[in-house]
Every structure is written in structure tokens, then in C-alpha cells.
Image 1 (cartoon, rainbow, N blue to C red):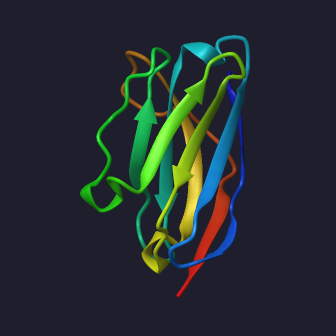
Image 2 (image 1 turned 30 degrees about the vertical axis):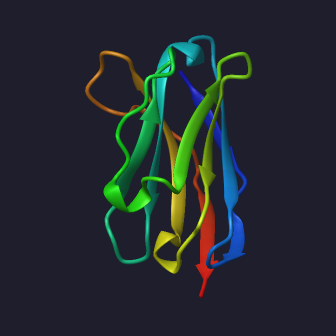
Length: 119
């Protein structure tokens, strides 16, 4: 069992930055791939990026490349999402999720944190 707690969301003007954090707890939390998803109003949940325990990172969607960066502190079992040059289209609830390294699906989810970008 892995518990995930996100923090760091908020309201920011277009062009601004936010950093999200997700603390993972549980005896085996350090063994999981940790990822970020987002869901904008009226849209389906979208995969953003993930990072393995050894630091391997998935590709970001083209619209996020150069703006979003994922990192991980294994000593703290925490994953971060640094978001720069934010746009109103980035407004969404951002979720942290955990997946076993060789498992097909994300099994554990955080409660989500709201990010709102005003124009």
C-alpha cells in the first residue's frame, strides 16, 4: 500500500511558475514509478510525466516540453513537478500516482491539487 499526498497547487498568472510535490509513504513506496496526471474541466485525465526509482523519465507531451520538469528525491520518497511558463490551458487538477515497476497500471492515487492559471 502506498499513500500519496500532493501539495503546491494554487493560482498563478500566465507565464508564472509553480512547483508541485508528492510525498509517497508506505513500506515499499520507494520501489514504485511515480507519475503526474492532470484533468482539466470537462476533459479526460491526461498523463503528464513519470519517473522511475532510478531516475528514468518518460517523454513529456510536446506542449509541455521545455516547461515542465519532473524530479525525485528517493531519500524523502517525494516527487516534484516544476512547472514554468504556465498557460491558462495548464489549468487542471494535478494528480500524483504510483505504479509498480513492472505493473501495467497506476494503482495508487493522491487526492489531487488544483492549479489555476489566469490570463
